[in-house]
Length: 369
Image (cartoon, rainbow, N blue to C red):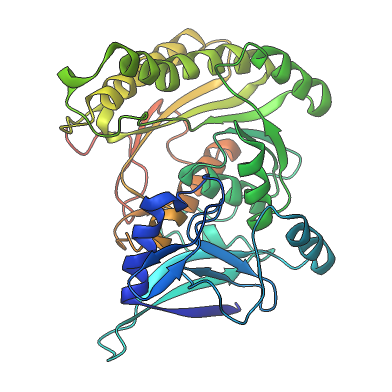
C-alpha cells in the first residue's frame, strides 16, 4: 500500500493546535493568517490545513507564504483542479511519533484510498470485509469527526451513502477529501425535515440503514450544571435530544423492515463528567429513548441500536496534535456498523452496545458494570 509522510515539527504541531482554537476549527469560515511565534498559519474551512495543488497531499499547520501553490478547499480553482486530476483523496490515518530523533518531529501518515477494504484489514476484531453493494445508508452528521470515518468505511464497503450536514460548505469540504457520497443538506430541527427525507426515499428507494451521529456542546462549552442559563439549556436539549427524536420520527418510515437505525452516543450517558452536565443529560435521555424505540419496533422493524463510544481518534484531533494510539479510529466505528448492516457481527441481537476499547472492540456490556 502506497504511503506518504509529511514531517511536522513539534513546535508547528503545538502552533497548529493554537491556530485551531483561534479560528481554524473545522467548519469555520476562512480567516486571516494567524501569527504564532515567528510563523504564520492560515485557518481554513478544514481547520489549520491545506490541500496542496502541486503534490496533492494534506499538510497540517503549514506556514503560509511558502513557494508551493495553495488552493483552499471549497474554492473554484481547487474544485476544477481536483476534478481534472480525479486522483483518489489522501486519507489521514494517524500521527506517529518518530522515536527520539534530534529533530523531534511528528509524521502525519497518509494513505491513498484503495479499492481494498483498508478499515477492515486494520481492525483486529473485524470478522472480515463485508460487501454492502446495492445498499443505501444515510449518515446524519457525516461531516462530524465520527460521521466522516463512518462515511469513509461504508463507501469502501460499496454502499451508497447519503451524507448529510446542516452546512453545504462542510459537505463540499468533505467531498474534497472523500469523493463518492451523495451530499444532502439536512437539519433535523428544520420544518422541512420530513419533506427532505421523503424526497430521498423517492430518489433512492427505502433505506437499508440510517446512522444518527449528532451532538453539540453548545456555545457555552464546558460549564457547571447550575451555571447553565435557560437559553443554553434549551439549545442543548434541542440540538442533542429533540433533533434525535425528530430524526427517528422522520427516518423510521423510510427504512426497510429489516433495515438498521443506529445512534452513536458518548460515555457521558453513563459516567458523570464535571462541566459536561448538559451534554451528559441529553446523552442519557437519547440512550433511553433509543432503547425504548427498539422495544416498540422489535416485532415490526427496523432493527434499532444504541452504540456508546469511548474517545475517538478524529482527523481534527490528530491534526491538532491531540492523539493517543489507545483511542478508537473513527473508521473502526464504521467497520462495526458495516458488520451490523451485513449481519456478520456477533452483536446483531444486542440493542445496547459499548465500543470503548480499540483492542477489545464492541461489547454488549458496559465497562463500568
